Length: 294
Image 1 (cartoon, rainbow, N blue to C red):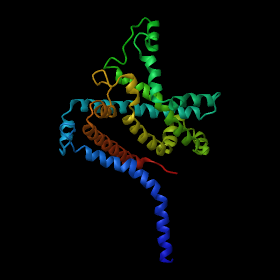
Image 2 (cartoon, rainbow, N blue to C red):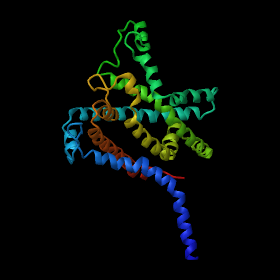
Image 3 (spheres, rainbow, N blue to C red):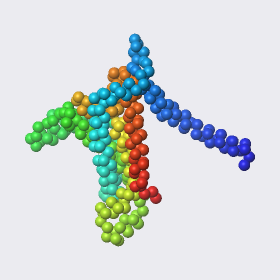
Image 4 (cartoon, helix red, strand yellow):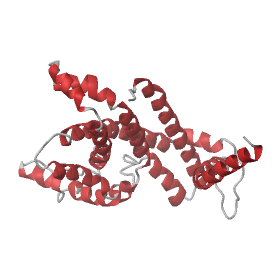
């Protein structure tokens, strides 16, 4: 080929990539680098300007007991929401993938919580969790049981938020599993029936392995969601009581916009991004070996 033709092909290719590259750099790479750079400086005021402190913010974070409490909260939140949401999503997808009367209505009912804004979901569940007048306490009262301050008790506030999040997230993940199930060849189920395999055996040895690409995608999204959901805390608890429901992203928000310590918030953000990157890479590294691509 003529050298000028090759040059034009390269120029044309880079021109096609330029808009996406600009957006990626402007909204992903540059903010990441700027956040890390800001985490190396102290909090600035009108009297004392910000100055370079190196790793001092990271040292302060390690010595911050609230950070460790918030981190443990977030890990419990992830451990409580991710497995249950994925298991429910698979169960609901298997159910609505069958020929059932009212199947379309059932699919809509499962998916409806997903399209609701998190603020609206929090207000709905606030009606459930309100002490004495909430729906849960009203039902307990029918059986002569005392009410409970679900969001005001450190022992129950995080489980209450986990239940609400599962209700919100499971329907979203169900859509991906339903799409994957509908792409499975029907001959597999027919062959399993001819071999006398039970439904559980067929699911465990045939269906679930073929759903592993979808499961990997869902797990990555579920982990990201478990660390980025923060809207509901504004309505329900604001991280209380005594930081019992505080999550890492909300703690970052508090430091940046309540305490105006943007440098410490940047430090926490760097740690959050590093954790998410490590967890995502670990999932791809370990789960990719178990995935059966077709």
